Length: 246
Ligand SMILES: Cc1cc2nc3c(=O)[nH]c(=O)nc-3n(C[C@H](O)[C@H](O)[C@H](O)COP(=O)(O)O)c2cc1C
Image 1: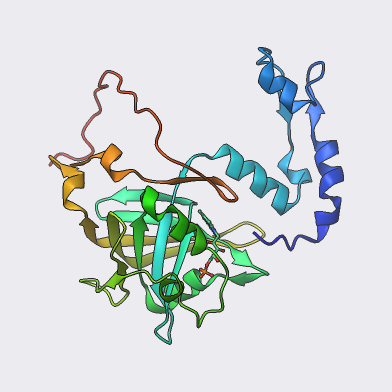
Image 2 (image 1 turned 45 degrees about the horizontal axis):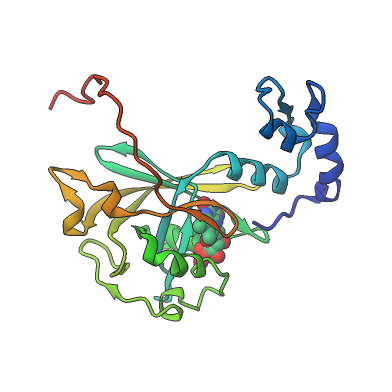
């Protein structure tokens, strides 16, 4: 993320002043990690940090993140593709997904433009074989360049919307734009859309549930670092009141 925060030059000093040691040698994060002293903790006041520093902290803390791999269409008909890991679901009926899209050099990214222009997009979930293509699709290109064509990815028509979906990912979700909220000084956009069609590879659905190991999803850590699923641990089932009477 490009940091346009004018206070950035002060960021290093800010971090130093914002970090207050609460125990002996706690300023040494490496020592805190290695040692058993769990009471030793850094205190970091975000009001004293620049945007880039906070971004680094938060993307290291909120891990691993699932990745929305998004196709969208420009007004001129160019198919755009980019990954977004600030991604979650916010409603089940109707199914709604949220993606947070920031800005580059102060300008909204192509995906945010396209979604607000056309009100349609497709969110895919990529599996391990697609990791490298997903990563490459984050390279910045002008809006008239299609990452889908550059990466030679096969597309298929969607059923309810004009934006095509990728053929390779195990899951594709056709979405209609519903809501956009802007947050913070950088005014990043939280874009919420309704899934109007799920496309899920046949072998992944068993009794209405997704076979997670077979899905083999990739997650983002930070920068060029990704993770795969590790061991899945099953504990006892805890009763949950049904979400609705039906
Ligand atoms: C795995 C991954 C996850 C990303 N997640 C986000 C995100 O959540 N929000 C964001 O604004 N940018 C994110 N990015 C950066 C965008 O993908 C990148 O800025 C891209 O060029 C945007 O493309 P566009 O301008 O075509 O929309 C991510 C990059 C990678 C590699």
